[in-house]
Image (cartoon, rainbow, N blue to C red):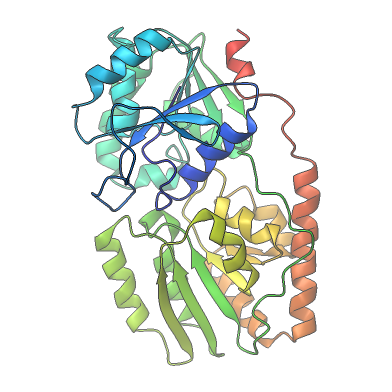
Length: 374
């Protein structure tokens, strides 16, 4: 049983939807039911044709789309009492409705008992905890109590494992543990993509428009670029105040930078976006995995990212750059001066590096067998 704020057919929620749906589709030895909202991020309109209090087949999973508030909680309790799941997978640390409410129901024995696995999705990182830090610090003891002692944490990388242990603030209690297993990544394309093939670089930002993703930093970096280039932003807006600040920064870009906003994009559109881009610019403040980065590298699109992801070594080994804004700005300036053949060689290196990484990261064990085997 998986709890997640947003799921298919939604797409505006970004990487969390991709992470959960790929787990469902690749864990073929297990049967999944998913509990999620009845609308996408940024929308109040319920999905058409998906009635509440009903299980709907979506891929390999049965999905229930709950209405806002607590109106469907009694139905959920009845369904789970009848089904009795073998494990709970909570796809967020501190979502009020889809993390903290399940924790509370489990604590109160209002749901059938079963092992609990929590995937914090980068919420334990320094960058995430720094946003509304005082509020999150106050909530931490309550969260620890709600979680209880026998929790399996799903970390997508060793760095996220360190973040989880740091967030907990003390040794994990007896029965608690961290399982490190990367999210199912996209397979590499058969060959690297061509890029824009235009004289002026085509740069893209493709992610949720949220403070964590660093669009403001990307725009500030571009103010120092003297060569002509285009910068297109793809993604759903999850923070309107932040987006207003980014739009104000975009209005201050020099005349050599052509800026546009292309709106939200669906996961299946990512390969085409990056195939036509000369670089993904995503100076994120923290990622537990970074699906947009993986999608870009899988088609050979170089990445310009911060050092707050698992992709730092690959980026700095010929697939782009991962570093402070000054280093990223210098890379973008160099990119503008490259010939078409030089850009193609960079794409070949990025694609080859990702393909080599992918071949060494095939899932060796079921994530849930590690929990259910106890």
